[in-house]
Structure formats: C-alpha cells, structure tokens
Length: 223
Image (cartoon, rainbow, N blue to C red; front, side):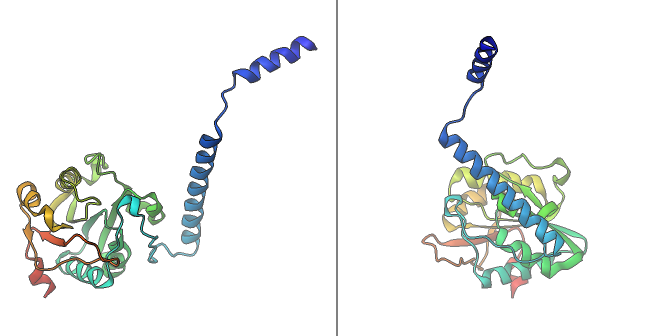
C-alpha cells in the first residue's frame, strides 16, 4: 500500500502545473470564446444576424468607428457602383458591414475581413484577417471581389503596404481606401489611387486628417 501511494505521488509530481497568471488567462480566453458562441447561437435562433452588431471601440486595436454621415455616404457609393450578384470585401472597416448588408439585400455578397474576433458573430460573412500576414486569406476569394473597401488600422508605412497587398490579392475591379492624408504618397505609389474630395469622419474626432482614395470617380457617384 505504501509503495502504491509513493508511485502515485511520483506520478502527480510529473504532471505540469499552470501558474496562477496562466490559469487566469486561460479562463478569460474560454469565457470570451463561450460568450461569443452564446451570442452567435442566440442571434441565429432569433434570426437577428442582420442586426447592427457594433461593439465598443477597442483603442488598443486602433478601432475608430465612422460617424453616421460617413457610413451613409460610403454605403450609397457602394450600392450605386455594385452590379447585381456583385461581391464586396470590407477590410478592417466593420462599421460598414451591417448597413451595407441591409442596403444591398440579396443582390450582392458582403464579406468582412477583420482582426477583432468579436465580429465572428456575423458567421460565414466573416474572415479573420491580420494585416501582418497579408496573403493569408482563403484561396477561393483571390481576385473575386468587384469592390474592395479598406481602412488600415494603423497609420504606418508597414500597415498600409501590407493592407495594399491584400487589396491587390482580393480585388478584380474597384477599390476604395480610407486612411490618413499623410499616406497619400505611398497610396499613389503602390496602388495609383486618386485622392477624393469626400473625407471620412469618425464618431470620436481624431487628430489626424483622414482622406478617401479610389480608382474610380467616387465623388461623381456620391453627388
């Protein structure tokens, strides 16, 4: 009996233990994962996946939501230039997703590519996207979108350059890019987009001036 107990103690000592900090982090991760799943199930049951699910801004992810006027203007442009059965990709601009889905209805497809996994509640219309890995998107969506709308999360050359790689990978026609005015030279150099008169605004006024760029006459569509 003593020998058996001793062996059991040795076996217990071989089992790795987690630190309190690691255990707490795991608990938080699984709690968030469970919460997302609960939200998704409830939305599916209530048939509310088309509702405007907009979470609070996460400034650590450099999230700044558009104001209502900007959302209305961009949705209007997209709706006008998109042909029936057209496909739209939204890169890092979740504010547009639900209003655009409501506007175009069943005549088009809208896909949200976003780092923030809270937006997984949008189900199959969501693709996880990390600009640090610009080419890690499903092969079946390469060069498949009639319109790509992007708003890189950070005003840095690295972020804009990598996001532009993704835009090139996804796009087969029209492009709209919203980013800081200070990025105009690199946008012109890498993607040859033209500066628009239309200027996007945010709910929380930002210190940096923002601009809109496109490879078509966006202003005339908006007028």
